Length: 413
Image (cartoon, rainbow, N blue to C red; front, side, top):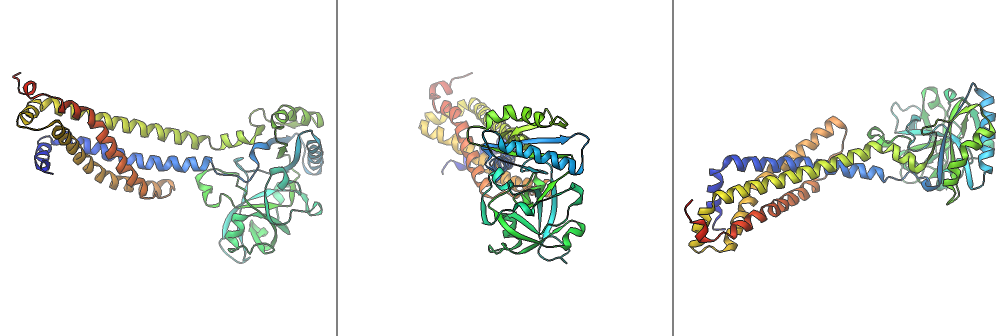
């Protein structure tokens, strides 16, 4: 372009404003790219499936008062018989935990009893022959537990069972190529790792109880063991018939109290639909995504306002020069093109620096906060978006400059 050199000369005479706007664009690009990546990660977590039929699941936290051992087991069995017989209930089970609950048991998994490091980390779900149906899991291969395989034990007396049902993610991790069914695995919990457990079934998907970043490497690695806890605490997982969940929420507490009053069901989070479980588990992720979204909007608005303000100032300062150009034959299109090109040059410098800052900031967050590296497409999209925003922001003051008449601009002041 013929007027690039005059534009560069003008920018050199206004170094302070030029540098400030370029730095503002650079910082905005760096922060917005990383913020959008964080939002994308958090939103992906919010939408991650658990493997359960979530719309029909009710979770009940139960604590027996002054009861341990076989007495607790007998009372739990009574509760399960009652729950399975309620109108609108498909099935019910009892476990130490369930997906997104926030607490549970985690062990390492190997296929070699002498291995020093586990192949994968997993969660352990105490289960019975009703658990798969109660959670609405899809059995992709093999079989479910049989009633005679279920054992009751104290939570601190865990030992490797003879049979296990695992999630597909864990099966493929330990035995790639779909060859896990019928193969042994070793659950490493002290002496538990010395006894093999045969994989008798594989469920399509089963998420762990934790939603934190630290568990992201084994998010769908789960092992169902044919044990039931005889201790004082545990969780009932109740699957309602479609359309019956709301009625069940209203009645299940009273039904359990009527069955046996020697229990505590917490008022807060004691009885939750799975929608409430999910909302609570991802509360911080939802808040982070919202915060990052607000930061992006505010930064973009400030950057646009800065471009508008600086260009408006330059238009006012150059009215006489604009008038001279118009008197010498420059068209409105020429004036408009001048300011758009000037802003594009500033923006190009800003996004060039901003792209380097964005990558550097991401690498720093990867090392400090265990985040993932973002794809460079985020930077590319951010560059295009910032340049487009800059051109849109400068358009209004540039149009005002183009409307300045030669007579008005050259008038003495």
